[in-house]
Amino acid sequence: MEAKVDIVLATYKTNIEYLKKQIDSILNQTFENIKLIISDDNSNEPKLKETLEEYAKKDKRIELYFQEKNLGYIKNFEFLLKKSTAEYIMFSDHDDIWYPNKVEESLKEIELTGTDLVYVNSKQIDGNGKVMHKDYFKYKNMPLISGKSKLAISRCIGIGCSQIFTKDVKEAMLPFTENVMAHDWLAAFIANENRGIAYIDTPLFDYRLHEKNVFGGRNLAQNTSRWKEKNGKTYKSYLKYRKEDVIDKAYLNGAKMCLDYCKIEKNKKFLNDIIKYYENLEKSKYINFHIIKYFKFLGGRNLAKKEIKELVIFHLPILGYLVFRN
Picture 1 (cartoon, rainbow, N blue to C red):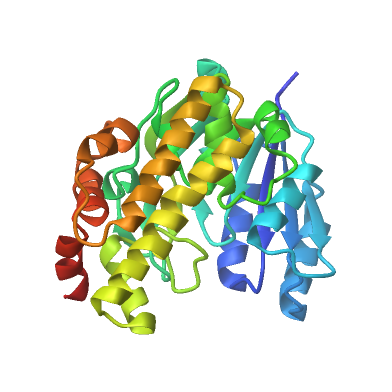
Picture 2 (tube, rainbow, N blue to C red; picture 1 turned 90 degrees about the vertical axis):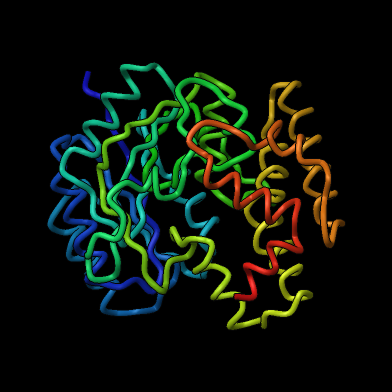
């Protein structure tokens, strides 16, 4: 029997033209045994509702929900996962464009490798569809994992819209705990504890970056620029940025989330150790000498440029500030 794939898509005050392109790209996949489950998070925008209802009428593979109150980004994806019944699940952003073979190639790879999750490469485009980066893996120095790795514990492996994962992973994710801050990181962590992870180096979709991305694929300069516009560029502001927008948001909170779901004792110890490491980093205002711990927790393949930036931010905050303020 042919496998079935559920594609879950959350909307909220979505750009309708972007949304149409993404839905069209999903419905035109070469692999047709899909269900597209869409949940609108109480946008209260008649045109958006009308557009979604028109698509649902035209294609029976669309299952549509409108939330009566705003759930928030994470809880909306939890709702969608609860509605999924297929053997395989894929997250979808509302504003990307999938290539026709994205589902087919992702499914082939996860069945061939016998893993619990596969993530794929992409091209990054701007709001007008212009290609900004032809290889997202290289641009963002994404960890490349075949099998199991400590990096799937300490880092987010593959952005959500690049992933396909098994029903086993989905069931282990539910229900979400209070610490869930990144559903894609959680999916990869659980897959890593089970049958492992694989990746496809070939770009299989266009990943759109624009001003209204919830997370997006911005680089360090773009993120710091946005912070300085709101908070200033004093050293005090930089230390706040380093703690709240970097260590907490992108590392420490993820480790706490994974600890809630961890089943393997050695991974629990690893997570407790890395949490202590992050908390120690936040106490250091000028320099932190525990550099060896960085490589123990966060070093790995394809990460050279990322490692240099992280080492400066984590262990040489005074040097990081000189870059930040300029």
